[in-house]
Structures are given as structure tokens and as C-alpha cells.
Image (cartoon, rainbow over all chains, first blue to last red):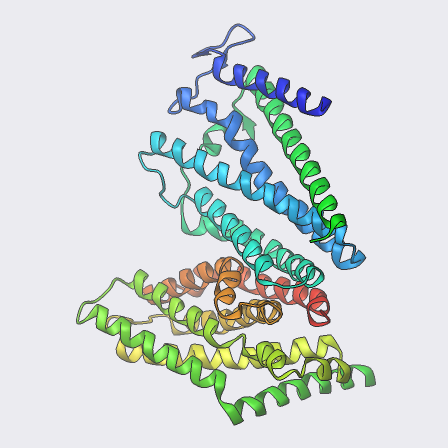
Length: 225
Length: 227
């Protein structure tokens, strides 16, 4: 309860700051955000879109780790944690795709143009989709847990290749090169603070949802089908 | 040494068993070949006398190989489940021998499939000309190894599931996508007559993909096999 209230308050402040802080060409006061040429107010999406994309990856990584743990321990508890994380990761993956596409409509003029980032998130969606398709196609919870864990591992080890091959084929318009040129972040202190606060807040939401889902599944499992 | 020799003999025995049973039924071979013939015929009908650009043709070649492979490669594991011979094989030999035997079998199938597809493609599709043959041959060879590496472990997974046919391409596509993008790009380079060095990045990716997927598969295969 306390965690939920704290998260609500925290993210409420982040939302108000993220949308409310003024953007000026040369920030002088501490509360002013810098204008990023070419993005202007559209840059505010960074406070909400980047954390969802981050959690889409975290959700899958956690699912993979608990899947690998299941293979060793054969405790159904680990599988519950793994599948719960995949479910929440899938939600954040969808959110990242949709918010990104809406932003792309206003920045690039089209919802979808197979930018490397869009392609990567699409592949992550496909992996999540395949993972759930596999889970629903297997009878028996132990077998389902094992096969899902193995698939998550195989999909997980091939993902890095994707990051390598994409730039060779397509060039990106994603604003990371604008925000992050020569390894130097073009954010001032307040922008970075709001961004990090949002990242922490969103991760907190993931954590809270994950605990809740795991608890529900565990109780469900104890009662029986 | 004696242990390694025995292990290699087990791998060869699993391969030999699968190969013989395949030659008797010709289930996978005929499925693969018919799939390729049908798909290329459809491509020819839809292209007519038009010449599609080289990028499109290089991509389509691998579309044909991907879906043809998806129609036949799951056979090795699915057949064991259907015949009910999984238990016997588990008793007789180690999971590693089964995995590498079947990987070898799939490798032979995919290589045959790729060569057959490329031959038909070169004969019947207008405008598909490869200028750098060495680059193309390397691409097809490495592509086949990578394909069979990923396809074998996914086949082992889906053999234990209820809806096998449709699940196979669904599970394989995200895993095979990096490989597909690399081979499509390398094929395009070969068609354009680019020097071998231009595709160095693709080849690095293909080789490391094969090493990583085979290693990961060999590590986790036991869990799937004993399930």
C-alpha cells in the first residue's frame, strides 16, 4: 500500500514536471529545459517513452534470468516469476511501440518507417509474441516452464546480433544521435533529473506490478486449477 | 581419446539412423523440394516477364529458403515424438550425441535445399545474376549452417508442443531474423559484384551467430530432450 502511494506521488510529480517545465533556448534558471533544435516540445517524450522501452528490455532479461534459474532449480516459483516478468515486459514493449509511433507521426511525418529502432522493438514484440504462443501451446506446467525458458535463452542470445546488423542495412533518424553526440549528453541538470526520476518511477511501477502478479500466480497455484 | 571416439560414433549413428529412415520415407525431402518448386512457380507467375530489381530478388531467394526449411526441418524431432521412439533414444545415447546427430542431418537437408533452390532460381527467375560467385557461395554455405543451427533447437522445442506446424515459423522467425538480414545483404552484395572484403561484417556476424547458437543449444538441449 505504502509503495503504491509513494509510486503514485512520485510519478505524479514526474508527469507534472515533464509536461510543465518551460523550454527556453538558453536556460538560465534551474527549472528551465533546453530547446533541442528540430524537436522542441516533442522532446518531452523522452521522459515517458525511453523508460517504457527500457522496461521492455528489462522485462525480457528478467524473464530470461528466472527461466535459466528454473532450468536449474525446477521450482515452479521461478517459472511464475519468469512468465510474470514477460507479461509486464510485453505491456511496456507495446507502450514503447505505440508512443514511439505517435511521436514518429509528428516528427517524421509517418507512424512507421522501419527505422532501426522501430525494427528492433518490432522484433522484441515478435519474440514476446512467440514466447506466449509457445506457452499456450504446451500442456503440463513443468514442460511449459522448461520449453519457455529454453526459448527465452535462445531468443536472448540472438538479440545482440540484431543490434549489430541493423546499422549496416538502415540508417537511423532516432534522436539519440542528436541528444547524445560524442558521448556527451545534451541535457541540462534539471532535464537529466526529471528523466532519471521518471526512469526510477517507471522501474518502481514495473517492480510493483511484477510482485503483485507473482503473488497472484503463487496463490492461484496453491489453490489449484 | 577413446571417450571422444565413442561420442563421435554416437553422433554418426544418430545421423545414420535419421538419414536411412529419411531415405526410406522421403518425407522431409519431398516436402522441401515440392515447397521450393511450388514457391518458385508462384514467383514466376507473379513476375511474368518483368525483371524485378536485384535487391528484391536477393531477398526473395531467402524467403523461399526460409519457408521451405520451415516446412521440413522440424521432421527429425517431430517424427521421434510421433513414433514414440524418444524414450528409446534417451536410453541408448547421450543428449549431446542426439543434438549433434540431428544438427548434422538438418545441415545436410538445408544445404541440399539451398543448392536446389539457388539452381532453380538461377534457371527460371529473370534478371537474377550473381557477379561475385565466391562471395555468394560462402554466403549460402554459412547461411545454411546458421539456418540449421537455429532450426534444430527450435524443432526440438516445438516437437514437445501441441500445435507444431504453425508454431515452427512463429518461433523461428525472430531468432533467424539477424541471420536472414545478414545473408540477404551479402547476397545483394554478391549480385552487385562487390569485392569479398565488403561483406566481411556479414561473415563475422554469420560465423559468430553459428558459434553462439550452437553453443547455447548444446547447453540447453538436454532440458528439452529429457522433458
